[in-house]
Image (cartoon, rainbow, N blue to C red; front, side, top):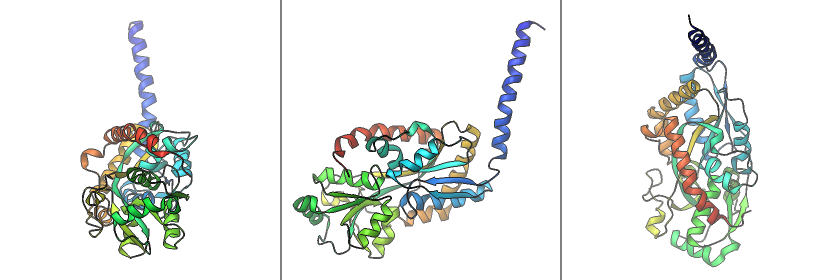
Length: 327
């Protein structure tokens, strides 16, 4: 045997030895419960969607996926924690458009960006709904816009933290109509919703999956949605387009692992998520809340990574231009 052949043999053996632990790790994964960090308080849109899909994923994977709510700073505290976690598949993030697109642009001193994660797959798309306290004087969206333009800073707008989807959604809406309300920040939009129901703030813009039940129950007044057409879940709420307002956006959510998570583990998690999104009961629960399940071709880790990259490139300049001073 020549020296070259010996070197090649040693290299091949080393490669197999290096790959074997990863393959065994992926085959045995998960051998214990998996923590899924939701970077917002319980009851918000990221939390609701995460609980629906991880319940099904737990059955597929044979281990519990345990939700842990780590709110604050527009989702950056929980997201940063996952970005810094061991890339072993046992700490995941229920991320969103807010945590991955808006927060890194709008929140000072964020220590991560979207490239610090291994995308697993998207979980849902949802338009934003403009909702206000039930005794707000405007009777429709046109009157609501006129009221905001007349009152300006006297109107209090709640949001779930700088960079959260609720902040981003209202930022684009108020920029489109040229008004600057008084912003009131919370550690999550669900807390802002509670204060709005109590009459302490006037309105907020949040994903339909989070507010549809309050709208249906009459706890809040809905003025419009950021979609071209009305939602089947909220048929009485007009689209902003119907009122002649250029306000369209779809807020997405998804599952991420820390960067460096072994590809076989990413693939296993992606397959479990894909199976959950094909389940009729999961699709119905998301649909009943006004959300939409991502199409099959959108769900692979590579497709989701490309989508997140495109979203960052699309929205970063818009957010920078629209943000101005924020509280």
